[in-house]
Amino acid sequence: MAEEFKDKNLTCRECGKEFVHSAEDQKFYQEKGYENEPVRCPDCRSARKRGGFDGPREMHKITCAECGKEDEVPFKPAGDRPVYCKECFAKKRQE
Image (cartoon, rainbow, N blue to C red; front, side, top):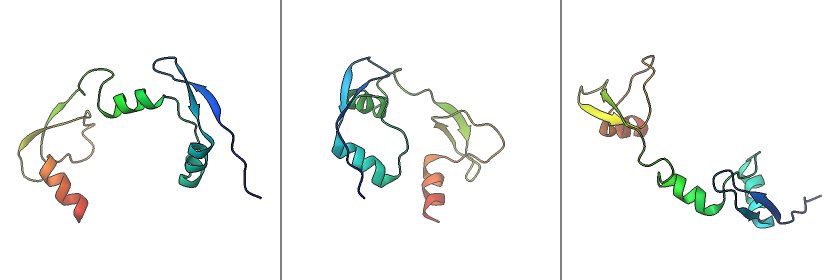
């Protein structure tokens, strides 16, 4: 039996505004295998994707493990794995 979805009102974790998690969105979430409901409204999700909440992302300088070039990454390397510049990372992803 197919699950019947109904619109739900949720409260955004970022701005505190109420937003609707529509029945259509709930079905999409289920189809994608998402187990959690959204915690941010559409506006805050968009702003977060653009890096608009805490200002620009904090970047960390690295030396590429492949080519030796200096670059920056948006995470703090732990030192237990190689870190690559943007170009080498793209090449590695294609392999």
